[in-house]
Image 1 (tube, rainbow, N blue to C red):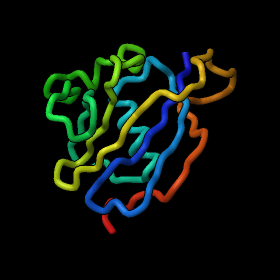
Image 2: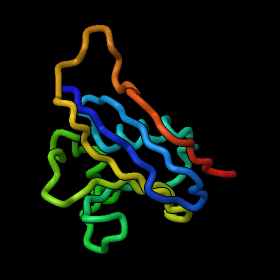
Image 3: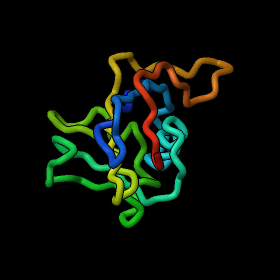
Length: 135
């Protein structure tokens, strides 16, 4: 199935202006796939460690991590995560030094079958200004 995701920049070392994008992606995509999709969307160099975590907010200390140490980024598919538990959010943390944090949420669009001839992921929309990784 194809699901809609909204990716919103929450904060980062060189955060200046708001940015977000909506994409459609296969729900069988792993978190590693989602990492690569986000990297391409913001045009960052894929040169730092990253992880995903589920928590109430981006600053919450109680987090469930998905990273390369527990290998969950390679095995957990988006269909396994969504819908998230009540009041919980999925976050993507890239580069612990600059601490780029993105919030990932499902859009209201219902999951649907892939459209013939369409290669996923597909960027549906983008708002704001892409962040500069190294200004």
